[in-house]
Image (cartoon, rainbow, N blue to C red; front, top):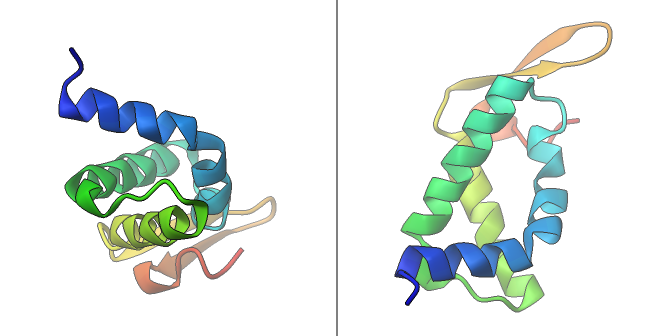
Length: 98
């Protein structure tokens, strides 16, 4: 029998492509270590708010955006790595600038 966490993770895997695509504005320019830290924070937020999860796409993406916003605020600033420069963006602006 699956644990609650295993069942929840399986539900997320079913929608992983849509969730990762939606996260692109947040993680697209993060370095590998920052991207991993950000997505781990977003998944922790997802687990902590799992009772709000609804697999219908519009509702699910709204919930996921809240998880991404919570993950953004795990740091004051994030470093965006561009081809020719590195920019620092405040947590409140992550996901709004690419």
